[in-house]
Length: 473
Image (cartoon, rainbow, N blue to C red; front, side):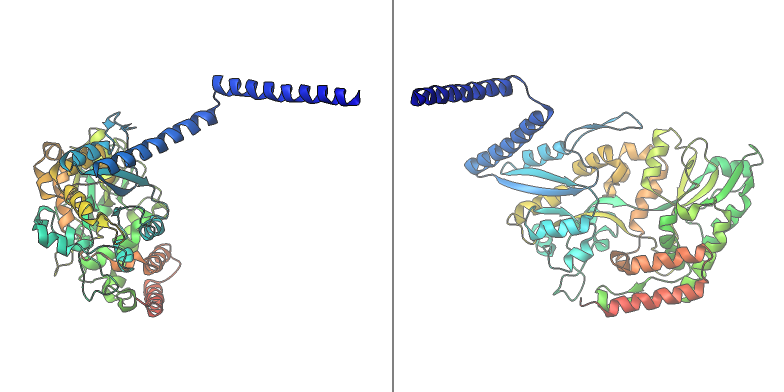
């Protein structure tokens, strides 16, 4: 009897388990949660990549992986200020693949957070073939990049298409090199320039700045236009600088006074001029000029109205291409004008070299295909795409851009683009390592009145030299 009851109970339990499984299956098939949808999209993306790889294997296509840093998007986006549609990098993919049928491009976008360390790890893991390497000096020194000179010579690639200094600015040294070599080709241009508000100059009846003003010219103009505006009655300031960039401004002033940052390429061999007479003069000059800037400039405050119709500052000592874009979007291109940064009288160059080059990972197994992509980045179509869709983070690096109608429409751009060829090269090597922060801290401390220029610059010199003495490369 007990055995019969046990059999009935067992049958009941099995039946309930089967029904439960059936009901669960129906529920999952009829209703997806948000996580289910996300999982489905991820699965589809993974399947798409796998399918693409399978197709590539069948058709003998090479998958070329290109790393990008910044605000690059695969799909189209809308500009928040102008409402303009910016095309995603899928446009570049389509064009390159059309010209190179045997290659499939896969872009790998990433943010600026810890980009140097991330790029190093990616190269060592052979995750990509082409890398955006603004930290090229650091990465090349570890032997992680492919030298490009053999490729340039083999294809007779014309590097003169770039603005002067763009190739030289990104030259670096590998662990076995005895002189600077080409490890990257520029594809993003960046610069700084002096910008001024012609309306405020007119209201104060001060002559416009010359195309290449001297520090003294800037100082006198800033002094005259600080105070109550004679036309509007509003408070004006003669000068503005971004606090985080003030060390680069002092360095540029040093160049104007005939000095340099120093010399050398390898960390252990760097020679610094942080406490030179020219540098001391530059820092003292900046302290005096700071009297005509908005309160809080050293902390990054006071310049919020720059580039707008309500601007209250006469001169921006170190403006950016992003400001020019904002000015153009607000229809104020006739109001603002640009001048070149200061230059060293002997070299004719001055100011921090910036931007981004493309390099080829030493670990890549697709070096020839990667080289084709680097050459593609120098074409007019690639550079026009960057200018028209990525302007917030890029200036053209090729000379022919000066002939584009969209460039001619903005008077400032002639100076801004030509300034790319006037920047100091090789770039400030010290900025790629700890001495950059040593020098910046010293400059800021002096401007805040916490230390005398001579004493704090001498300290910075000693700290930088001590750092170099501990380096092995």
